[in-house]
Image 1: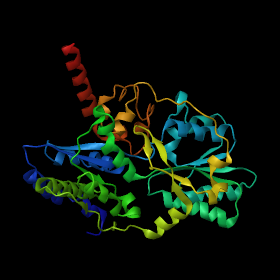
Image 2: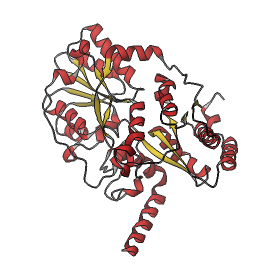
Image 3: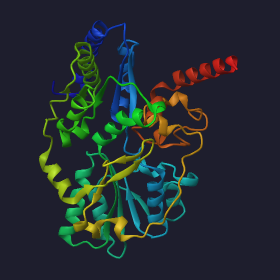
Image 4: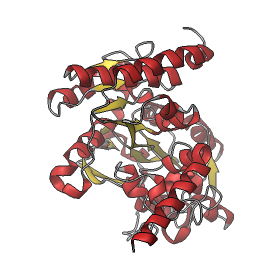
Length: 388
């Protein structure tokens, strides 16, 4: 298939749906975590969950780079814009995420801070070139997909001798987070989420390849299928996972072979290795401190590290009370389990990052399953009141 429409073909989707229904064992449940928020939105947008039997469950993972950034780091970015007076450049999704005291980058911009939305790291570099008397900081977020462009911007700034450009680095790593989720039951049994396999991230895997997920099959005995984002990709990946489970196989398979290789993009990996090094630990919203799960700028490029250049204050930042984003990001709860969903928390007035981000789980439920979710919440509430 060459064109995107072919990956949304209704007849092929019905054939895959029939195959899944025929091969799924009705005597058991299948719980598959889609780590990436892009998969979550594909599942809801195209109604994939309606094309699989009721015993095949999708568990939403923490794969949204905006959602997992802890409030403290967002507060740091706000401080850079306010107290240090920099031009803070950010991708658009971050602007509306509420930090402490319901303040966001957009709200401090309205109060006079110089916060600018950019579409790429090159936009931020260009702003630095045009404003030589101002410090320009790029808010770097994202998984392995967005890390190479940030690395390229830092090396380009070094090559040009720019002295007014730096990066506030918050780039995180996918495999470490998956390992943390699987280790969670050993840390706290109440956090246990039974998982039978993973839909592996596709965009991330174009950079790192499929090899970094092999520990999941070798150590944790969990099947993985690297899956594309189109509905036929997801359906085919679910079928591949069901076959692994039914046959007792535990492997890393690559459904997205038209783009992903086992080795990934080695040129991009080399660039990232040149600019960044592993942090011993990093805080993820919902997951807490996760060992070796994020990158820091190497000392050789310290002049371009905003954390080294600016003195950031110690902070005590807290989540919005009653917001269930942390549990939703761990796969322990779903948006319908949050009592703020749909009343206090909406896209126009988000309480948590999962409702703000275009890849957030709450945003997916709101956009594609709002009425059904609110009805389920009302039913659950009525049953709870009746039981009381």
